[in-house]
Length: 286
Image (cartoon, rainbow, N blue to C red; front, side, top):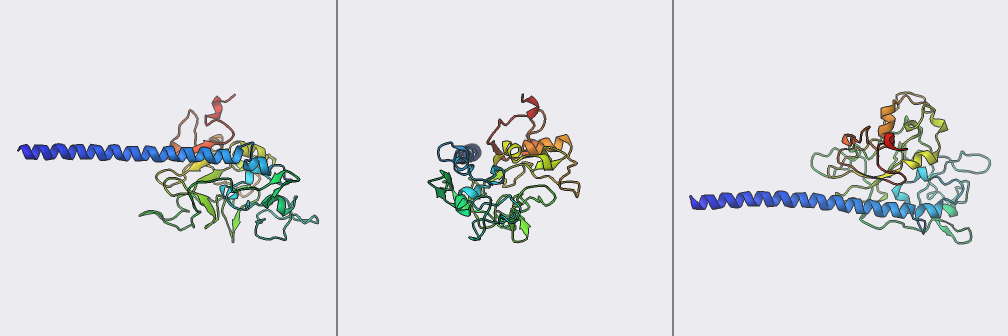
């Protein structure tokens, strides 16, 4: 009986130790993700050698079209200008692929540092757990039906997102399969979310890139590997310049699921870091 009691006590101690160890690992992973995201934010926003400080002096550059992959390779930048007699490149065209393309500024200004002009790309800007962006059907764990089902390839086809990011015939707003990425502690890529114009006004054509960029944030899918933080919600109209989103849906998109009163349920276990505003309910913001 004494031996049985000792074994039972040891089993209880082991269970408690494992539970505490698991909780410690989860806490460590979350802390590491938060530290990564602060580092990424610094790489984007730093006034001394940050990505935006280097690139924003280039005519045609838009921060709202930035993806984290831009900071790891030769910008992978897309043009916003329409094609025309000036030889500007069309929205959805990769500047770093075709050497003959020119935008509102020369391609060289987008893909390299110009010492005379004091602008251009001089990265990579981010160091960290480098990996690649997954394919749509890539499964990371048992029962995983693919990265697309986990939110890494949101459908933005019905939304007015300037300069749609295209891969072959599909739109890939966060990254191309195989493109360099920075991975979170759970092995999934961090993404940069910039809400679509529909998140701000019924007349999406009047929404500026600067307003959209104010709500830009870095997001980790967290332990469950699902990007739950709302951003690109379905547009219930065929007219991409008009939105029928109600106030609550716009709030969810702009605030990454932070609902009125500070409810975070819509984010799941995602970790969110806003670049240009506090992570608070905008109803409290003055």
